[in-house]
Length: 311
Image (cartoon, rainbow, N blue to C red; front, side, top):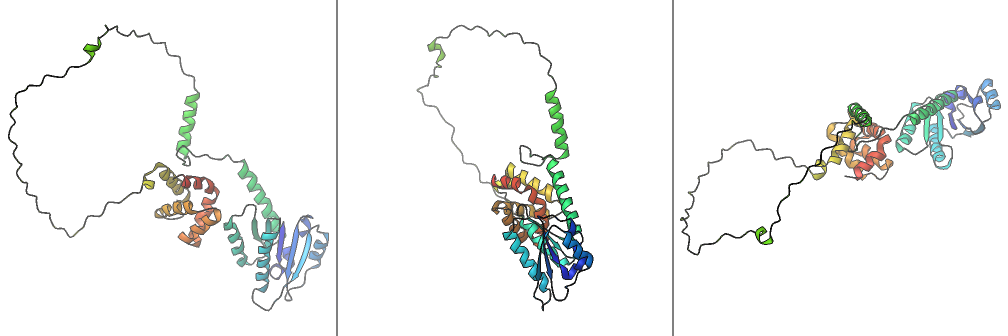
């Protein structure tokens, strides 16, 4: 793991737990002329630690100078380092935007977190590992034949149908053979129907009278105009579209308005990957609402994307 220490903010307290690090861990301490001291306890803990240490005396003279330089180093590590778990050790809430940005980017294996000390970061790492193990142990819920997420009621019906299918079926008595009636053969001449004879005498026909014209009742003028009938596209009428729309409603109920579910399907259809899907969601619904909806849909992105491509 990688630890970036905002020493101006946390001072020696941020190094609590450094003695528990391993030789594979890396610690980068960012300090300035305004804060260069550490306690003897912190010094001894650094000497006993097996981790690798690097110190950066940052250029100061501007507001938040250390924060900007530490943030730029995060981007460098994301692009160059093989270690994908980065912990910023600081109490500065401004760093929250960094991990939110990279969380939304949804890069596989990358995790950026902000903690007040190394010991808190190690505790957070243990929680993440425990959550991942628990998530892997949970059974995956499949989609039904229409591509919908099964509800509790449908799951119960499925279980009942499985039980009924497994129950032995009582043998039915064999039905007695039915003898077909024997008919006499028919000659080919008799099988061909004969046309009725046509009389050569002319047939008198009744004279045809034209119907009397019907007066149309004058239309009553009304100030109110009839509302045009709502047109439905073929996609809206299709069963796969309705199934995808139902999935979106189940997942995003209360997150965005119902009228926006069709927009989510449009963004899904245009997205090439999770990054472009995130960009589309935040563009259509705004950063706060779009990000909240994206986080909910991200675990189900591949399944929803396949449904959208099948429309």
